[in-house]
Image (tube, rainbow, N blue to C red; front, top):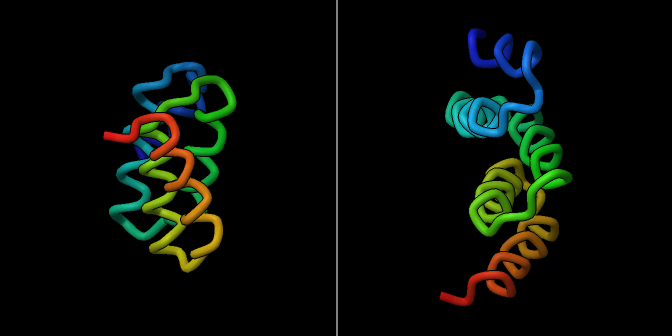
Length: 79
């Protein structure tokens, strides 16, 4: 609850939004996690965000989208 409120109060704080997405995934709030990762990726493209998005998509059962996200990770950071 507190992280979600913090994100709503300051949506430009990337670290808070990232923390919310990670914790939302941990607690099974997969749609909120996915939406937050997608929102973050609009302003900052990073392999870590793409990886976490792909992982969350996989857990949520969106396997085709998860594969696309993971392929994008490998293109950005093959190691």
